[in-house]
Image (cartoon, rainbow, N blue to C red; front, side, top):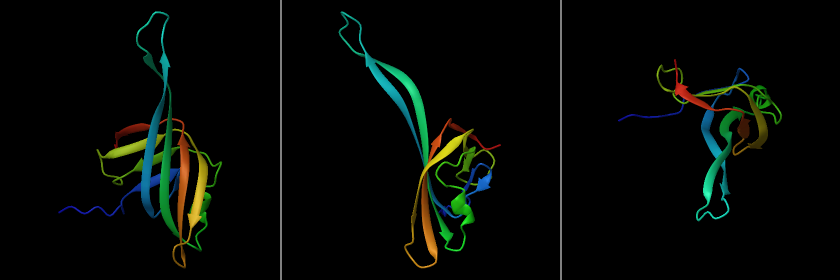
Length: 130
């Protein structure tokens, strides 16, 4: 039986590695407008602009502020996410530019901080890692 621990996931933002990843989610949305012409009997759906966002959650020890500084609101940079690490042919998600729009910190137990961040992506490409 296969086991997936998430230990191989890699994520970089602006070339900086985000370690101890717990979860990564992406969300893509398309603006959809409805139009109709005079005399028309149905509305037509027209696609507009696409937006992409990534949400990440990771753990850090309370004496490691370096990684937290990589996801400070306003930080920018390219994003590279490899859900299965550096395995050739597996999924790779890239964005050529991004901006961190929010960060949340919690400390469920002494000595550990759980951080989450929202990242707005300028573009999103899903490819096979090569």
